[in-house]
Amino acid sequence: MASLGAHHSYAQEPRQCLAEFCRDFLLQKYGLPSLVEGYLFLIVKLITKHATKHPRLWVFGALTGVVVPLRWSAVREQTECSC
Image (cartoon, rainbow, N blue to C red; front, side, top):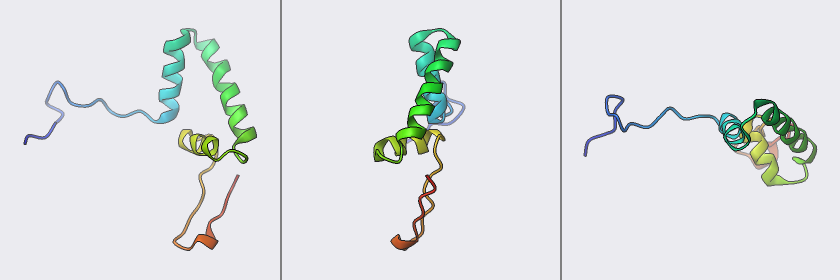
């Protein structure tokens, strides 16, 4: 089976980080960059306010770079939350 290389026209585009994807999605949905920046500001504000109470929101914040991810080790007791 042949692998997909850069020389094929159907090769996968370079991947975006989740934060860029969210911005592009909002830009495509709303169209105005100023409106998108306002929504992104509110999203960041809500994530930083509620991430410590809601684990899924914290994971989304960590994946987008809004909150600092947990530092971990092989021993569970050594896990630190930097939230």
